[in-house]
Length: 398
Image 1 (cartoon, rainbow, N blue to C red):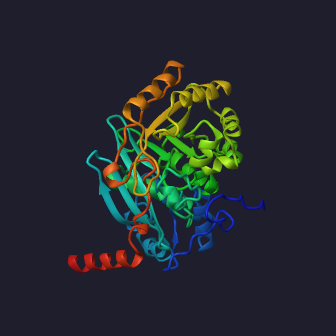
Image 2: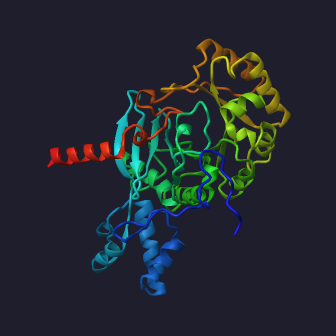
Image 3: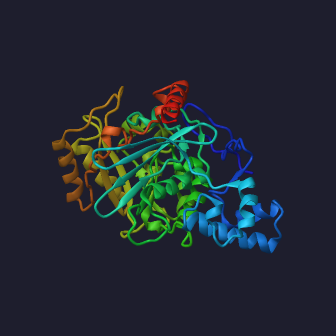
């Protein structure tokens, strides 16, 4: 077994992937399991091989295509077997602590795992698409100085089930079962929530394979984007084993500034990062790499910065699109957002060089759901406060 990857930040966690705590009731959650894992699990619990294979196929269909969370809904499985399944297994969803909706339609959920850890996901509706921003870790290790999420400590990796469970919970909320490609509100997924996806590679890969499975959630890999702050050694593997679109959190074009904004740059610099982008499997003009660039006043937004960005992208002949992101303020931040005039001038320089550089419209700012603002309310209120509020709500609703 390979040694665990060293992860920069406050904590060097236990070897990855770290197992989540088992459920208190002893049952096994089926969310996140492949067909083969389902079959093997059923066999372990005493079903004959042929029976285990058949039941695994049926369970897969009901879980990932129909969105069932109760075994009694599975009409092609004998009623007599429903209690046997319910005694041993569960079809889980992340617990919802809080759900908020922005004035612009953006929705944010504060979720809680079975072992009591909180994380967030966001759904952003547009006229022609709906994008779900999915978290990969509880907390984050990267400490990016402009990012509120980056001020959290890493707690643990999310499991494949907890990652795909976010997609399934969104489907529940949007009423999008059974799974069908046409007419969906949830059309796109971005791995841009809490955490660095490439530091939880196995679980992210396994979850996205379930999302992309044509017999299940059936989202095309062209509609999924994985964002990384630049974990260079894992990028080629991501292209080969997952094959989704790549986004890179660049945010600066000089070593000193990127070292400050994205401390991972001290380990994997800009040039090695762009070399890895140039080698990313499947990148071409039809599937461009997106470079995320947060606009910070007097820090990374000069004309010279824009020209250097163009030079770097040309040097590595990258099929690129640059997303310019107005900085979303949060309490205690050391930065200000660039002025609209400065952002427009920066964008024009990049556009005139033949590189797309749209300015992203901030969404969900009023509920802290915008880019860089995700930070669980667990850090804003103590667990005791939240438990007390939950108990009061339960009494009030009784």
